[in-house]
Amino acid sequence: MPKLIVSIDNVVVKEVQLTKDRSTIGRRPYNDIVIDNLAVSGEHAVISLTNGRATLEDVGSTNGTYVNGKAIKKQVLANNYSIQIGKYHVKYLEDHDAPPPVKHVPTATTSDEADAGATMPMTMQALTGPRVRVLTGIAASREMELVKEVTTLGKPGMTVAAIARTPHGFEISHVEGQPAATVNGVSVAGGTIMLKSHDQIEIGGSRLEFVDR
Image (cartoon, rainbow, N blue to C red; front, side):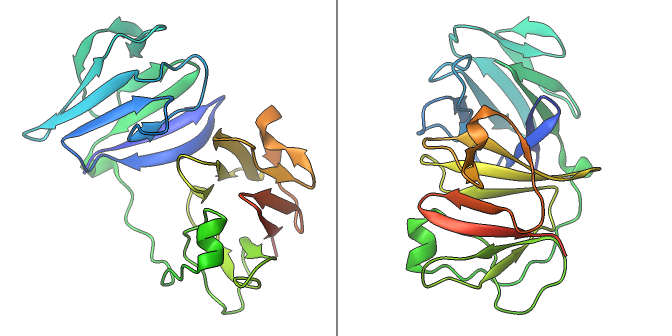
């Protein structure tokens, strides 16, 4: 199925599979694809899937919707088309450009994880690669491998942050919601923060530790 890669300032903040016939894009939390930025209208655009073809339609947004640099009202999308919404760039990719699925350990969601907005593949097995470790609550000591290009933390509609793999290491950025996640007490709302091993992340009332060895 097609997907969208959402980025800002060349940092990928989320990947979204288009699984519905109609997916809404906007700043309000009830949208299917939430982009929390003042340049994005509450209800900004819609992507419709019909017979395998995706069509993007601006729904009266304040700042407009652009495809490959041109303002559009309604536009049929093709593979690798570039969409601009506010300051965000959205890449449209069709099935044949999607990478093979990554195998994850089974998801173990506890009530504590739910309170923190964290529904993530967790394991108690000792890991050695880049990972995030839960430090608080009944999920303490559980770990999540950072095996994807972008891993999101938090609960959509509340507070969400994204950890992105870059050539220089791992960076965390704010995606949506308030209050934003913090790294060693510094809010990521002010911009992307490069993570160092043993940095502590607080999000949704839970404390996590980034480990890179």
